[in-house]
Image 1 (cartoon, rainbow, N blue to C red):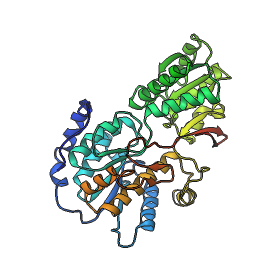
Image 2 (spheres, rainbow, N blue to C red; image 1 turned 60 degrees about the horizontal axis):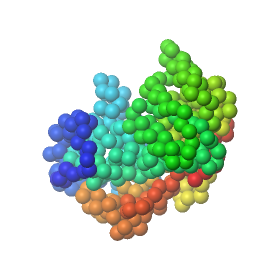
Image 3 (tube, one colour; image 1 turned 90 degrees about the vertical axis):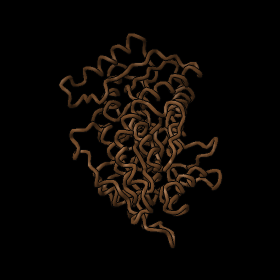
Image 4 (cartoon, helix red, strand yellow; image 1 turned 90 degrees about the horizontal axis):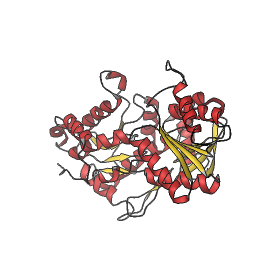
Length: 391
């Protein structure tokens, strides 16, 4: 068993809830070596096509003599637990994975709040946890069992601020955000970047969490009210939206109606997919979105990933699919290199980029040594696709 460790703030109210989930799971996790080694993922619950693709990839790249690793994930469905919130479901999932002695590493969750709340479960259970696209700056200090693959919200905020200043020539900005760990962190990081660069921040506006302008009874009114409130502060050159696809699409439509010339920048939480495009409508055109991967960037294995994913999953891959793919491949590489033991896997990951070279992923090179950075891209929406305009 691992001794609980972590930086300040590791034990929060969320931690207490998480530990309640894991109490019954710990004895099972401390058993002998797994009979059927597995890598688990907590993303796209119920997506058997994505799981099948990941399984085929691990079978394809398994080294000679390497143990076969089963991909575990899609058999757990959120709809099977209607009594639980999405966050509580993530904690239940984490406790089940810790209790399964076959599971050697977990890839996910994707959201910052879920990752922060699940981290104590993985820490107490001694489970290596790779977090592909959660960006909270609190994550690296939460546990020695947590390995963050994405740049944090401060780094992403600086990236957005630099692009708005240097490329778009912005002098006045507004920031809209959802009031959770992702939105608050990215809004703060962007505000700090604007302050360093002399870009005037007219105001920061929180948005109602998960409000959908296409489905809610109030429709687009809350977003129109936000745009009207922003107009009282002045006319912005850029609007940064730290939210997911629903809120970003709805806010982009309202902002473009109020400020036709405003340039809109969205964080990595907004994917170029039907969710965003249908809500933004014509306002989607020209919107800038941060991404961790793009099919047009020449990275080792990226073109093969696009072909295989599209054929198996029957849709175009998004950047979140690519970073989860990297996470699963990296977890498998750790097992093949260190052996089928959770602590050995953790120690191998901890030495990535120092004791041994960084892992070459399709999205970025991955290492956990000091000063190692993840790649980011700025993309611009053109119709139903996007082009890379900054990195």
